[in-house]
Length: 81
Image 1 (cartoon, rainbow, N blue to C red):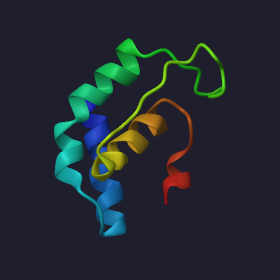
Image 2 (cartoon, rainbow, N blue to C red):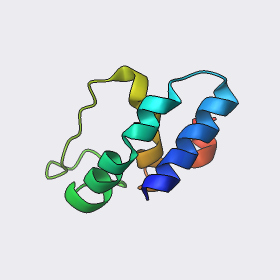
Image 3 (cartoon, one colour):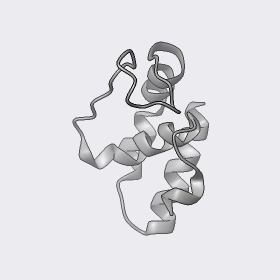
């Protein structure tokens, strides 16, 4: 999963010709474990009270967050473009 997140990050920053891919690449393992092994949330019901919440303090790494949300089914790849 970490490699999938890296791929999404590289594709989106390359397409946008903007962003900070290296910080996202280094956070891929952390994000993959948190989003797909530790956190509990319903991607189809993001307002559910029992969803875990995630806060990202580094704005430059938002692309890896978008990649994790995409992989979890919150939105489609086409919506990122």
